[in-house]
Amino acid sequence: MSNNNQDWLDDDEFDLEEEETQSRSSDDVLKKVRRAERSKDKQLKELQAELEALRKFQRETTISQVLSEKGVNPKVAKFIPADIEMSSDSISNWLTDNGELFGVTSPVKQSAVDVNDIAALRQMDAVTSGAISPDDVNDAFNIMNNAGSAEELLNFLYSQGAE
Image: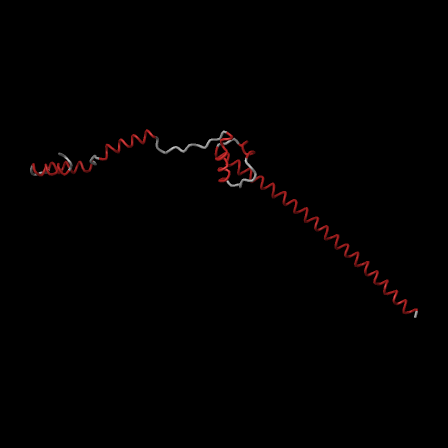
């Protein structure tokens, strides 16, 4: 009977050694997983920092371009809120809305033609609206010269508006 007990004890020792081996290997695997997770966390933080730096650079570049296009002092950039979309249109709209706070006035759109020029153009139009073109003058001269009678000449003159 003692042999049976010995076999049973040997089996327990083998099971304990196997459990210790499995425990050590699972601890090693767990350590590797934790190490990999820390590495991924570190990499994620680096990528997030890089993304933030790129966004900041893009914002500064876009704002400085719009301000220089509008002829505005670049120091105004620090007053532009961070929640504004970073497109030139949205920055231009913000500048139009808030520009007077910084002494920036939106340029008044001037017409392509000056007011005095418009008056002169109206005068020229009034003078030339009833005028005869040079081609018509040559035709009228030819008709008058070639009129065979006074009646033909008078009919022509009446057709041209002469009284």
